[in-house]
Length: 112
Image 1 (cartoon, rainbow, N blue to C red):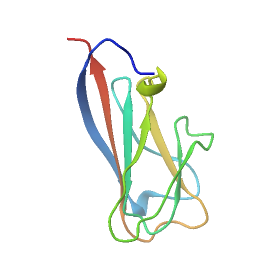
Image 2 (image 1 turned 120 degrees about the vertical axis):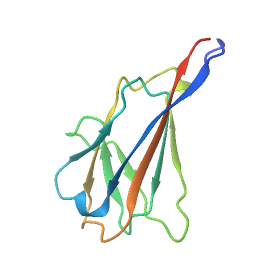
Image 3 (image 1 turned 30 degrees about the vertical axis):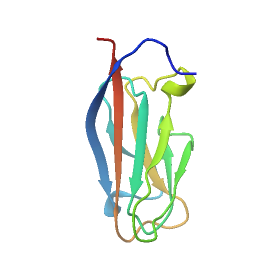
């Protein structure tokens, strides 16, 4: 259940990574400077990739696309959670992507 206290959504600067930077070990995509309440992943990679929030453990698989990227959402706030100043890491699963990018958008909230 989401908070009953209204808050303003604050978009955080988008982070992204190109296919040539993805390899067999985790590499940092970027870090959000504020706690993340909602996060969206949009991939144009031609291969599935693995996401980690600590650079060690596997947390999320991001699918490939057919023609149009379909954003995948993680709604921390709906579960009364935040990802504190979250870093996002990425690695290949079976083979490295040969094309595309991964875009990660996030929002924090501020009580007016």
